[in-house]
Image (cartoon, rainbow, N blue to C red; front, side, top):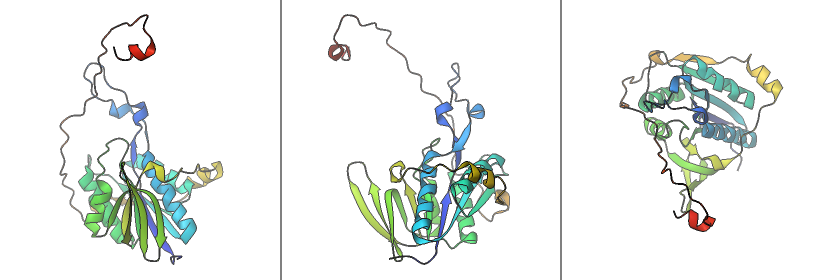
Length: 248
């Protein structure tokens, strides 16, 4: 059954490009401040799924991101991929945790909504906490489906297949609902050059985090972040077949 005019939100993050993350060899501290940033990979899958839902059911897609000035870069990417609106929640208060990000997103979704579907990547590629999507759902008081590898819409309900590693679970929920998706849900499109050029000129709405009526006190304190030191045995194996050498 076709749904009348879907309003879809997708929350995306500018994350560390962990493929280029380096560690100080002396302190083992990750060199975060010199690591390039990019749209979190699984958020790109969420964005692609939002666009596919719009293509099938009509409506609009709004992309939202919390972050500093450079977070606009991922919103420009989202516009180039095809979203209708982009909202930048400018972090003007300093370091934030998942609680603050969730509070800011939930408040913005309430003010700018209503949205029938709110999509997230299952987790970000740099922190892997998998907290924000479910926190937003709890704050809004709506259902949350996690680890979705496929999504379909039937009337006022969303049906999803959940990837639970050892089994697939099929669930449904009444809309509005939040959904966190896995990488397996789709292959994100690549925007054309003309779309990238046009996106640079499109407006992005900006809201200051400090001015939102939300709890801005962090609930999580990071004590340390350290790289893993891998020590080799330093053993040279000679003149053994491969199947025996691997056991040494």
